[in-house]
Length: 139
Image 1 (cartoon, rainbow, N blue to C red):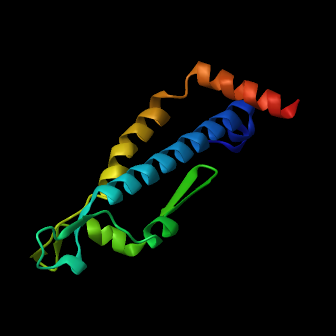
Image 2 (tube, rainbow, N blue to C red):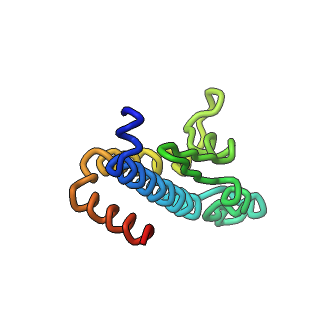
């Protein structure tokens, strides 16, 4: 995209639409990941030898506080704690383990929606809404 096109009214409106879509995508991924973490069954080390040895959800608050989404211009940065990537894996050093779909499944599922939104969602109706929003802000 040329700089003159990017600075035009339509270019600014399109950039705002992309930023809004990325922000919505980030919030949806964070919510889905949080739901998946709360439903995951993990072994409760305090209950070994008892009938019910599982607990539900990751109880650590650092998983929530370390996960962040930041949208700048047309770029989204999604940071998570490193252990969250390993929780998703089915094997670790050739040893099978229970996996919890807390990262890959939410990001992939919502990525399809984001692609569809960016490809087909920027209609004349949306352009008009953003123009009206820009007009309201300036006046």
